View 1 (tube, protein in one colour):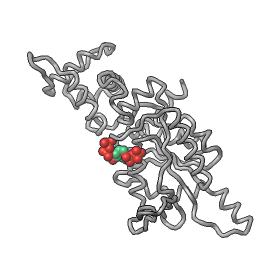
View 2 (cartoon, protein in one colour):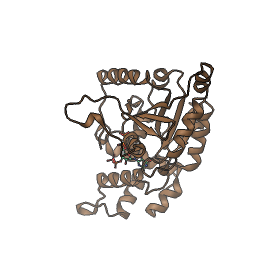
View 3 (cartoon, helix red, strand yellow):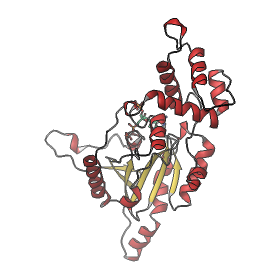
View 4 (cartoon, rainbow, N blue to C red):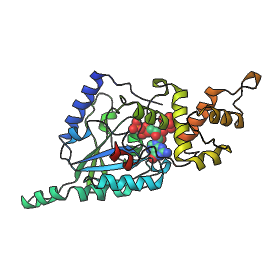
Length: 289
Ligand code: G4P
């Protein structure tokens, strides 16, 4: 997995680059992970984008709990954004992007009209943290026949625009923002979904966090997948871990459970959706915070 380690210098550079891109932009497309819509948000996105109209895409919707995705959509809409649940891998929801941008640019169209200007195509950029699916989405949207001037040797890479229908142009390079990794809980959620590098946090801790979360919030999915029973007391998740390891044959010499292997298996299956459609945070929880 390609993930950037962020240092203050990187953040300042990313911020500068995005500010530069935003000068050319009418609509901001913020890409979030539908499983962690808050934890996958950049902490300064509002400050960076200011009053620009915003389209929020809840990506990887195929992996998220549909009921929660609807709640999140309503939550962000109530804050004035347009929201679409998408799957950048299959393209589901992607056709709605251009019409949503047009809806958001209502005021801009009016302004052009009042000045007697002919409306031009809207200009948008995709912003998001690493691994949220920016490149996958851009690849979905790109018109393969379009010439890419910057790819020729000796030609300086210019900002390229990808035509999405007749009314929308998208910058071909997304704005890459850093996640809110200084909050422990956010860090765990980012790690559990695979958004941050496994080496950054203890693998076993992340698996234990994920297992406890599943046991509390999605007990049926957990018991069905691993054919286990859950104890009443979930404070000590060790025995559940051990049972999963045993059931799945993660055993080392002497018949002991191999915890590393069990942790790896659990996280792999969680991230790929094998355990089921899982969302780690809800708007209700957010308003209590
Ligand atoms: P980025 O540019 O924002 O950094 O993200 P990128 O497109 O590289 O996507 C990161 C991973 O997420 C990729 O997996 C990609 O296939 C997957 N992905 C993107 N959109 C979706 C989606 O809507 N649903 C699902 N299920 N997966 C999606 P990868 O290439 O296998 O990388 P990795 O698993 O090794 O990290």
